[in-house]
Image 1: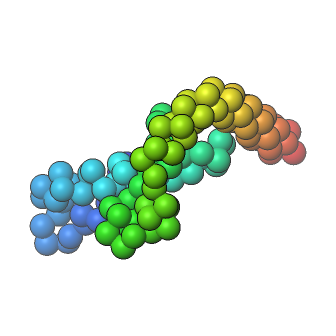
Image 2: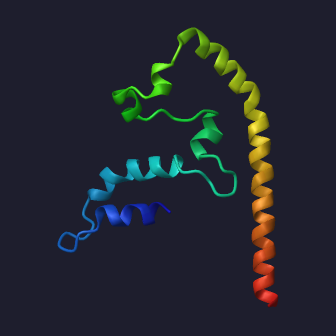
Image 3: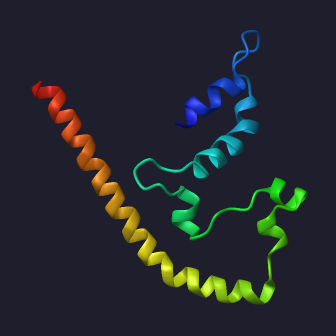
Amino acid sequence: MVLQGLKPRIFNRLNKFGRRWVMELPMVLWSLRMTSSRATSYTPFFMVYGSVAILLTDIDYGAPRVRAYDKQGAKASLKDAMDKQDELRNIALLRSAKYQQVLHRYHSRQVQG
């Protein structure tokens, strides 16, 4: 997936790949971490940190989520999020297992059919 993300960003017929991939790699990794998984419907960032990432553009342009930030409420929110994290991971695990079962059934039908 990393290579699929890098190739369109760095391909240049004259210079081949050069060293451009070094500059593009962090952006490709960030995009992979921010893309929801089909199996769990959560992003890898959310699965690790338990919250949705705030983009720099959200801060620059004053997204509603950024404007509504309250320092006092953030501490209470963080505690609630930590309590919910285990529950959300269990939900993601169940979704992933269900997704794998569906894939298994699909492939089994294709092989037998």
